[in-house]
Image (tube, rainbow, N blue to C red; front, side, top):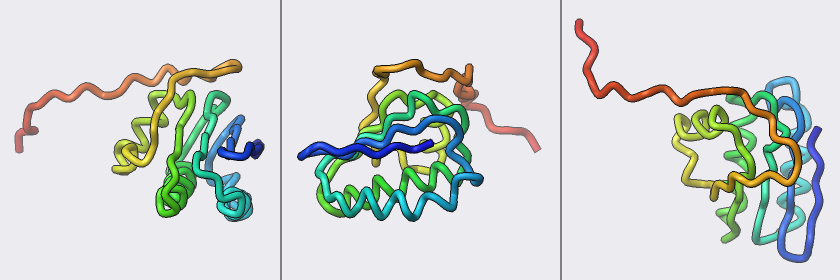
Amino acid sequence: MIEISSSPTSTTLVIDGDLDLAERDRFPEIAARVVGLRRQLLVIDMCGVTFMDSTGAAFLITLADSSRSRGGATVLRGADARDLFVLEVCGALELFRVEDTCTHTKQESGFQRPASTGSTPSA
């Protein structure tokens, strides 16, 4: 479930549940509504996200890129380490200002970022 609210200066998306391929059909409508509001600050509250795949990551990247192209900023609030890792692997983490705070219960995946060994695999 994705809820949209706005104030005179910001738009907030609160996402609960999975942000994945199954939700893909809703993404264009939501993106159009967010862009139509034309607020300088976009806050994406991910405290309730239980799973995000590459489709969900692409959706977030599209929203942040759209905000940036209008001179705005995008805050990613309460994202799990797993979700941040996906965005980092996509090379898109710099599109977001990351905040750890949650105003409601946060879903935790237990994901631990893979440690960098610094060694080269042998052939």
